[in-house]
Image (tube, rainbow, N blue to C red; front, side):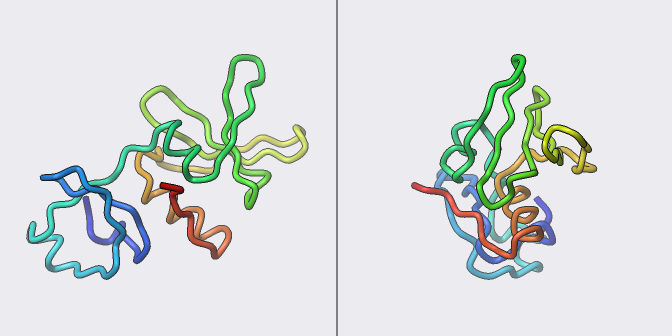
Length: 122
């Protein structure tokens, strides 16, 4: 994991214990030198639901929505997730350039679009 991917408030997992932690400060030199062994938390359906997402199932395709972003939906590509923009079923555009594999990546996108933190309901 690159330290530059993290923001204060992101959720990460401690490698040794599996404990989920909230990033309180980002010390790039410590993370880059391996002083803090953390990894991204894989994005799963279960975690999306805990993050406040709900889903619809149309034609066998599940789409996950958050109330703060009604036109943006997440879709599972098998190994990863992608972010789509859909407005009233008329326009459908792939937004994410790269796959969304981890909770902290989704948290960063959510913050960029809403200015709000995306937190997990533990």
